[in-house]
Image 1 (cartoon, rainbow, N blue to C red):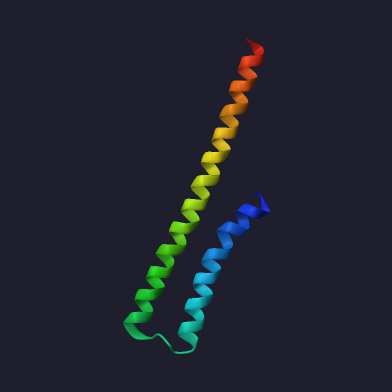
Image 2 (image 1 turned 30 degrees about the vertical axis):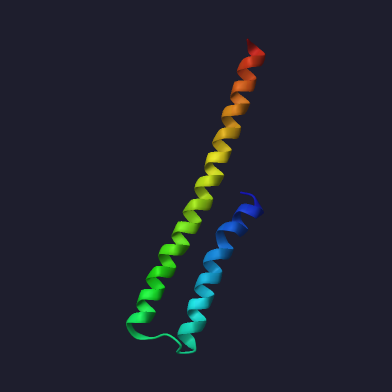
Length: 76
């Protein structure tokens, strides 16, 4: 895996959860609001990671397909 991909996958969730930990530790959020924000944080982080992973996977598949087509054209 490329370092760029890893950074794109790690940094957004890290920022989200660092903010949630800070808000929770400083008692800015508590009770049901805290639970709600943590659940929303997990959902948003998963969506971001899935979106980035899907784009990267699709890009790899397109490159692989293009390379295979190029090799097939050369052999014909």
